[in-house]
Length: 319
Image (cartoon, rainbow, N blue to C red; front, side, top):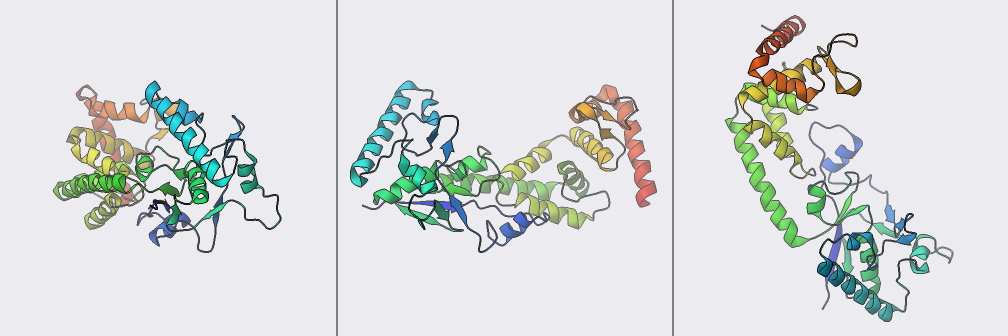
């Protein structure tokens, strides 16, 4: 019976308020510029002087399995699979085999180098030994995430573009993400215009300022929590902020606004000052947030709140 597996492009989508080549491609449903090709070859580990084949029972990830029984069981499974594939193909599939070297640097002229992943579903039939072998080294390549969930959780480098499909896992992940997204949508509706604006400024990089219209703030935050391709990172950030007390939100907002307007800055070591020769206000941005939310430091909070208010009044003609 055929067993079909797939390697697919990660579903990254550029946010509506991000303007990079990559985000533009993602908004168009593309992972790279049309017409370009991504070719992978078996990854050679310079430290261990062998290839990542998916058929090496001594692979470092296998040896890292903490439970001894599970580790030995996995080693035996991989060794047995390698022997079967070697018998079916007549190939040497050990981790230092010339077979993998020849995929990267073919001896025969005009031979195909590596495997070209297309911008769509790359399908492998594991009933065909050669396809099984190719799938194994591709799925163990550092440029391919072991699953969508692993990438969503931030367990893989952000620059990679491919993942191994796991239908059951992805279905569960989608349900979980939908629940959190719905929670964020409710939070957005139930939050006042003033708090929305402050949350937007705290998040940063959204272009929200003291002058941004309430309708625009709403739309920007709505786009933010619906951004695809970042897992639940943006949703979690928004849900965390909406759950904070007003005092903490005010403290975080004041710090971000002061920095956004250039009234305070971070210098060497993260120390926060008004200017390079001015005395330190706090040893870090986080410490300043704690100070502003501390009832014992209310004089400091009021002082900088007034500085911000006066600055905005002069700059934007606000009351």
